[in-house]
View 1: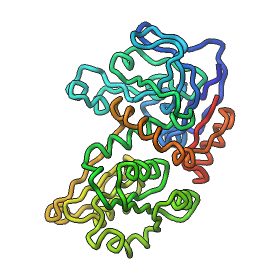
View 2: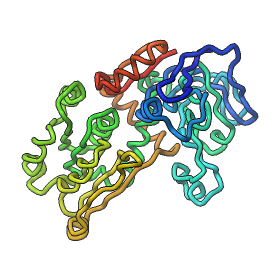
View 3: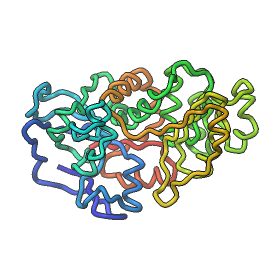
View 4: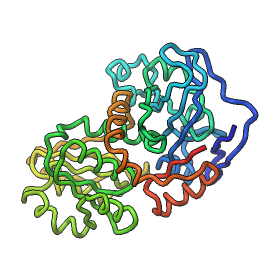
Length: 340
C-alpha cells in the first residue's frame, strides 16, 4: 500500500509498503476512501511536533470502509470516520464524556499511524471508547473526509445557544472559518459577517452568499451590520494575536467570544480589558478537538450542506500531496482532500 510518512521537518514522503497495517484484537482495518490535510499537518511539516515521533504515517481526517473487523458492532464494508483524539477512557474527563480533554489522549496521525494512506488501522481503544462513527452512504467521500474538522466546529458551537443568535462574525476565512459560517447558517443565524484580507478564500465566502469585509471595513461597519449593538458571537479562527485581542470589541453586552484558533507557544499571551469582560458580561471560551457526539452532529450538517462544503474543497490525487500542502500554505486552496 501507499502512505504519506513524516520523517521530520520539511521531510514528508510518499512511500510504499508490502504489508497492510495490523488489525489488532478489538480494532479495525480501514480501506481509506479520502483524507484531508489539516493545518496541524502543515504546522508539523514546517516546524515539527513533539507529539509525532518519526517515521509516522500522518493524517487524522479521513473516511473509509472497514476491510477487516475484530470488533463487535462493525463488519466488513461498513463506512466509517472518527473522532480522532482518543482518550484513555478512565480519567475524570473521559468519565464526564469529554475525552477530547483527556490529559493522556493519543491521536491518529500523531501517536498512532494515521489516515493519509490506502489503509489505516484503528486501535481497539478507539473502538471501545466509541470514537468510530458510521457514515451514511449518501455523503460524498470528499465531503465525509472533512468530518473531523467540522466536528470541532460543532464542539465549539455546542458551548453556546447558537441556534438562537441573529448576528455573528467569523474572523479568519481558512477552512475552519468557512466551516463555521456554513454551520451558523445551518443553525438559522441570519446575519453572518465573514472577515479576512482579500484573496481566494475571501472571494469564496462572498460567492457563497456571506457578507465579507476586510479588517478595516469590519472596524468601521460592525455596528451598522449588527443592529447597532455589536455581534452576539465572534468566532476567531485566525491565529493572530492582534486579531484575538480586538475581537471582543465587536461583541455586544452579554455576547460570546470563541477563541477557536490557538496561538504559537512562544506568543500565546493576550492583553485583554478586564473591564470590558466584566461590565459587558461577556463569555470567552475555547474549543479543542471533538468527541463522537460532535462527529455525529457534523455528519448531519455535512449531509445537509454538502454542496457548499464541496465548493470549499479542492480534490487532488494522493501523489500530489505536496501540491496540496503548498497550495494551502500559499492560500490558493482553502481545504485539500486527497484520494488514494
